[in-house]
Length: 203
Image (cartoon, rainbow, N blue to C red):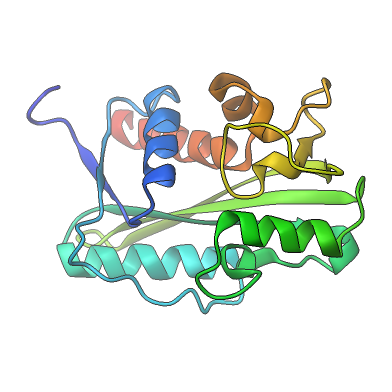
């Protein structure tokens, strides 16, 4: 890795997100940007925005202000049509604050009927504290709710999310990384970010 390779700070302490975004940006043609995890000492603000974009920008702005570094942050979640779009921005704390993935998934399975429509949403925010440039990139993935969890891959609601864009009927947790990356909400948002980063570097 080149010493002068440009690097981005990822405003999260979530290792799952770090690994997934590292993989997505590494194969998405971003032109060689590296990715660093947020230092443990930096605290992020509460996710109290009304939209995914507000939450992502809030985290990116806070991390950029604390470190002086170009920062990206994501906010993502799942929307159930049968529940009026819930849990939405509360996806990570749907069952309760501090809930586990299993608790949140169990609550969704009890409240929404199997086969009902779902949508994963991801917004990635980019903040450069020196130039004051801010951008947001969104991706989504439509699917339906499985009758019960299946698969050992992925995290969050993946074991019960059957994507429309993959015709085999598997849940996200049953797909390979490559299959998931091609259709996932985070994959689509990351590719949009990577394409923009590439144009900035070559423009």
